[in-house]
Image (cartoon, rainbow, N blue to C red; front, top):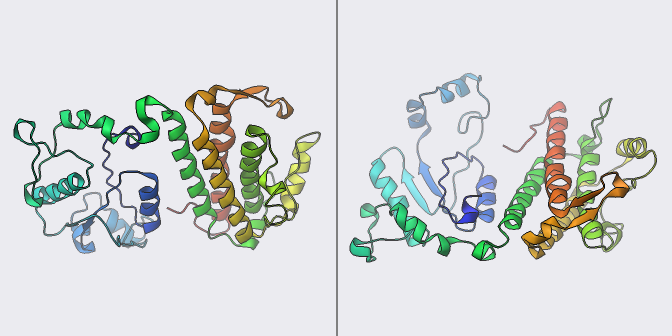
Length: 323
């Protein structure tokens, strides 16, 4: 959120897999990766909380470099030697890289700009950051317009990424696994969410046929679509969730098309349109705003079912979320 508003953000995160960092790079317009390279022995010696010790003993899970893999960056903008570099020199190198990419100003004496060598770089003043905030603002957020929808787009992309990463190692057999009770099988939960997005964007918002009934008809990899709302919907939906079969690779291709269509639709919206009312009486919800539907029927829905899928993976002996 801060980055979307042009505020410089520094995140000290392990992010042990390249996929996580690649996702951040794709989502953040002005991104710089600083890799603090350090031998595992030095990390262990500097560990005041004993996390590495517990990881080696098996009492702490997913410790990068010990009980979980660490994938070093392939092309970071800055590399710092965590074992040998002086901290001040290392910090100056990072600031200098930020300045060279235009992410930070280069203030000089009397307001004049000057070039700074790596070992002489100094942080810019807070006043300089404020002065440049308008320059750092994303074009689609100029003059304060569409900040909310821009944030929703970013959140939606993150939700879709998380769902796809969570589902990525699910086999067809795992997707069909069903427990007694109400918990949805993984395949049914995944189909329910993605087809729901398709219907919401194309039918509810745009008044057209969903893609699964148009160009993707017969190509989604689903044996049968979810039931339509109406009488005995809960019972019909539960029966469908146990009966449906999903070709996961085919369905993931369809899901990608839905995510792209969703993002294109969001890109066409303005903040003012978020307050437009939509009639959901057929679903027993009366009239709701576009913003309410995006927050609950799409974003909240994605995270709810992603959590359900993660739990069902865990029951079957798999790691749930991808981190």
